[in-house]
Image (cartoon, rainbow, N blue to C red; front, side, top):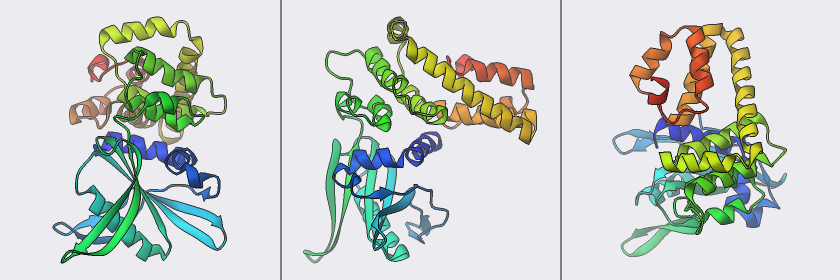
Length: 302
């Protein structure tokens, strides 16, 4: 997965670990305490391919009680590949050896893969005999039912619904508005949580010009969506400005702008980074304020 999209999904799952577990393992969610997810800082081994190391995407603790503890392991894949099952099985076994705990593995496919949430088994064979097997869960977003996920009272589901099939009888503009309306009417979201959810929708449910015009017309009847986006965005910007004063105003603004741009558009090309590096603080403020309505880097002159 490209760095920008990989970063967005890791941020989402780290921010909503309980939501993700409720979506992928509803039969276990009520009985287990889901710990924080973290990115692994070290490698499990150095044997992959031509000596390349293996580093799982996200790991965290699952706990029923003091004596019943396990590890949650998540891999995020932009596109489905046949060798993913073998990779999941290898990560699963290496993590079990590392922590001496049972491991529950899940792979999330942004595009492709088995549709919806399914149980998978990878079997290793030797001379026609099964020499070992690993069970894991797969979640394929691309062809999923957005209407079913929008009906859930799980905020992460509304963001991921943006990657799914537009419900029958609904336009893409209506699909996008439905995702954002659910977020706007959920009072317990913090600005940072809401910003991440919005960025997922904006990144993966981009509209053509005619669709965008329809969306703007529809949004006028759902005022809380526009209010929500503006309020959360302004609070995130204010947080960035406070960080800028701590780090040095110009450098802090540049760092914040790059972070927001990469969440929205993926990894920035070198020419955009060079432009930002030489831009004065006033222009940085203008670019940051314009980001809310921009559809591409070109709209911002980057």
